[in-house]
Length: 120
Image (tube, rainbow, N blue to C red; front, side, top):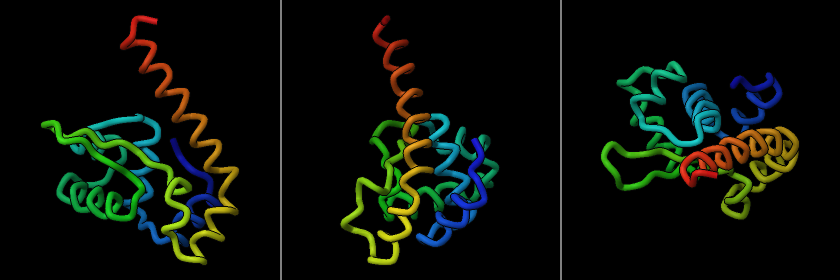
């Protein structure tokens, strides 16, 4: 999944780096993933992926479980709206439409995964 230039710039304005954006977008596309597989999917070098994911988790953009290997899950920053700076909140509000598109794609992915694991 790629993002529009506008969404890329907006994500940069809220403080995400290029590697963080690539990782987050790939995670939205996959729904849940391991760091190793995510590195392959998004093109972030394996030697950097854990550092990138750690920063994303600190910023509230992703979460992880305690399994081995660890599964990484996306969060949508709009859920952490009140924790953002005033400027970041303004940018997030302008990004409602791109985020809603991402959320729809992610929700469909999660629903499909739930259907497959529950046997419909």
